[in-house]
Image 1 (cartoon, rainbow, N blue to C red):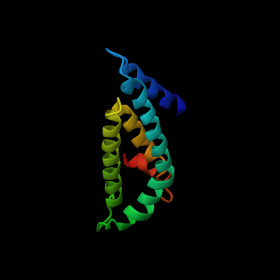
Image 2: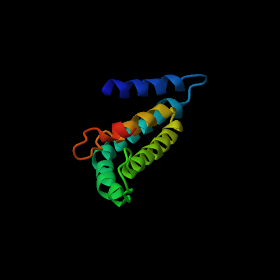
Image 3: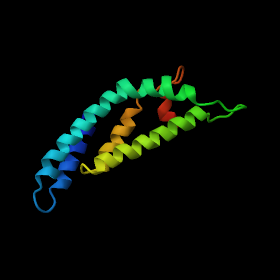
Length: 124
C-alpha cells in the first residue's frame, strides 16, 4: 500500500520534470496531492462507510422480485463512479489522474454489508 502511494508521488514528480522547471508542477502540486490523499483517507474510514451504509443505501427503494443485482448495488456502483470521476478530475489538475483513481478505489475499501465482507469490491 505505502509503496503504491510513493510510486504515484514519484510518477507525478517525474512527469512534471519535462521541459522547463516549474515550481508549482514539481513541488506544490505533489504537496497538495499528498494533503488531498490524506483527507481522502480520513473520509474513506470515517465518512464513506457511514454515509453509504446508514444514510444513502437505506433510502433506496427496493425492487419487486428476486434479482441478482439489487438497487442498492446499482446505487453503490453509481456513487463509486461519481467519486472516481471527481477524484480523478481533481488530481488531474495536480499532475496525474492516477492519484484520483487510486484514492477513489481506496475510498470504498471499508464499505461492507452485513455478511458480505468486501461488498463494494464485488459490486465494482
